[in-house]
Image (cartoon, rainbow, N blue to C red; front, side, top):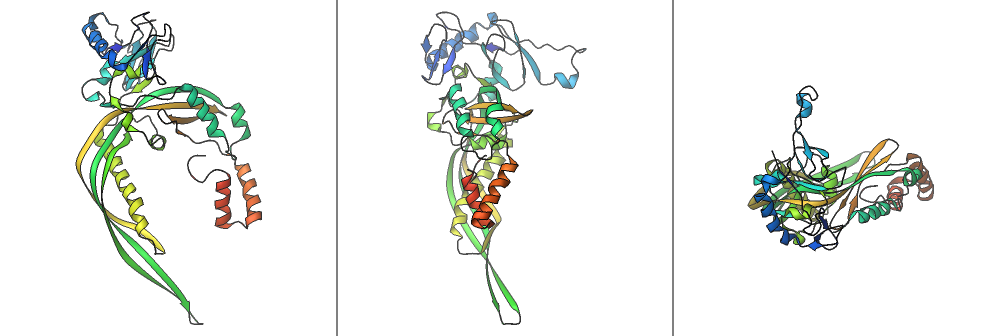
Length: 369
């Protein structure tokens, strides 16, 4: 059976938690504090004392669980109060719902599952609450009742597993550019279209491009949290997980590399397409890419997840636990949209120009509502 790891305060025996403000592991009861580095020896001690350590139990009764229901589920026993924590095969760190004690499933961080890096939390739960309030500000299409009637059901700090890809990339892209001219001889109207092959090439180095390695996380939501400052990443230590949830990856590096390559191409395309000005239309036709000096790293990155319920629907928001960037889609009041659209159509004559002005006024020029 896999083992549970808990960090106990040497002074009073209470569970320790990582404090994002001081970047130290602290005791919430006696105010003792420790650097994560100082707990490395404690890790070794726990391994030596594994015989006396409580471990999780896997409870599965054929008459209570169908085979497909029990598959992938584990029951962990909190050594502080004896309460049971139900989790799937990727759960790596959790908090007991009965005593709030933090336990770390050590088997999730051994062998190939051991992360190379961890990016510690810098912002706490209160920052996430405040960021949610700011996210609502200025959203003119947000239903008025959402601000007062929505309820935050859960705020959870979680270390999300990410693959970081670094590579030297050589890319060649062929675009098709078109130019058109039109004229009339009084009897007929003519349109002449000329097509051009536009060849572009680039060499680039990509450093630590993140791709989330969790099937449970929405890829678009996780991508929107970037950028992360990896200069603040440290070698992995379980001490940083104290007080937070954590998952191990369930999408391996080989399955994630395709997404990384796609990001390489799209990034270079966004740069090279800027060199194709002067054509009435430009489209990308073919792309070739080769990578060299490839490197991948496994990292845990800090994310605050907020689950908000309104009108029986659950909305998920996320905040970068390092930078505070907040993302997530809000409900959309269609009646208010058409009201604003009518006003701007009358004022600016409608059309594309009116739409652009309307979107900027409503704060929808880019990003989530």
